[in-house]
Amino acid sequence: MSLAAASFMYDQIEPDKDFTLCPAAGRTPSACYRIFVSKMQHHKKRRLKLIMLDEWLGLPVDHPASCRHQIENQLIKPLSIQQHFIFDCNGNPDAEINRFREIADRGIDLCVLGLGKNGHIGLNEPASTLQPYCHQARLSRESLHHPMLQDVDPKPEYGITLGMQEILAGNKILLLVSGKEKQPAFLALRRQEIDTQLPASFLWLHNDAHCYFTDDVTRMD
Image (cartoon, rainbow, N blue to C red):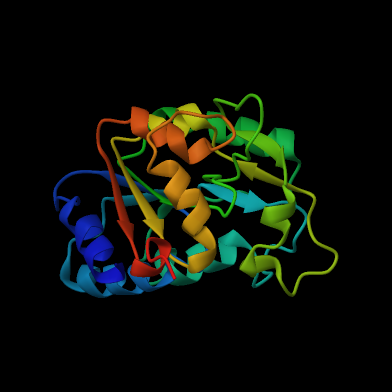
């Protein structure tokens, strides 16, 4: 999965055009990012830009569990990306939202997403309604048990995330799914039914969304 996904990411980038990447943090895309960086070593990267997808709120800026820590160390620094937008997890959420709005019209060429155990994308959690724009989100119980937060105490109550409209406005979307624990959400997604209780299901509305997954999310024991 990781090799195929990294190759897909690489193939989207043209040397002489601006390209804005919006990557999810987490365990699932890590290997994909390593391969992507390796592929990019001889690519003209000067026009590559980055916008963060989401962030836990309340962690120290350099906390190893922060999304910022992963994205900086796996993408921004290795690829020397000079133009990037990163949420400040210690900043005022309203100020961070306003700061994002100032660059929101830049657009996203490729949004890389993971699938939450409860079907969330970004930190857009299952609910009776979903938010279209960048917002502060209360974390669900499933999100509080995310592997990134397993050693964090106390755990953050909120995160900040791009909204559904901003994700769906991306030119292309790449959804990565791995892990047996994701199987229920993935099987629900494959029913092709749009449901706010399964935010990832809204990806069926996008005309250029791609999904790569490992065998364990489909294998029935």
